Length: 328
Image (cartoon, rainbow, N blue to C red):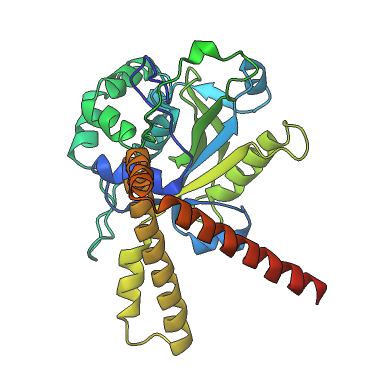
């Protein structure tokens, strides 16, 4: 992977990366999950959802004209909004634009409070009254934010010169934006726009609340792309699930059916959290030297040929069994 002159690496659209990113920045009580559907049942299963992070293929300024909404001065509307001033920072910026607008929640139950943490609280207070451009520079100058962001970059022993690839060979550009309700209005927070984009008034007291408006807004945006395009991903910023599920399971009044359902949900969350921990650890480590050392050791010991032959035999046997099953 080539070094970007900005000093910021690309961000994968992986919910576990965003969850660990928020934790690394000191945020408590929130997690990020993939959102595969915007139907009411799916949204209810992840409730409460505080914000959405939308990833899409960036096709230039022309695409922005078809989004709808009205750009407004976020400061006057009570919206915390920062511009993107550094390449590759849009994922982290979208997450920060979202969480900076999520109201803190004080809970009597352990692990269920929502807090920004000292670093982000200091940045929010320090940036009060600043323009989005100035806020972007404040965020990009934070060592903690940059180092946490870069801690999830994939390690690679190779350094490629990006100028060596033709424009047709270069990867497509993707961009992250956030959707969040602030004081009864749905906003789109896109760091490449001058101001926050106001879409519509929302009733946060309804069953689907602001998410129904966000769903229509995102679907309209997706419709501007060619039919069948799969250039999108949607993440939900929601309250952390494990503390709430653990508490509910201790309630002696719940039915056995509800208990089994809660236990299944808790096990799913625990497995997902552990898998994310392992995947994030692997991202930070370059395993190729270990692989090369293993292959070198096998070659020097003279066992490489035997192992390869055993693998070929097992491969042929699996293929023969598969062919027999197909004939039957």
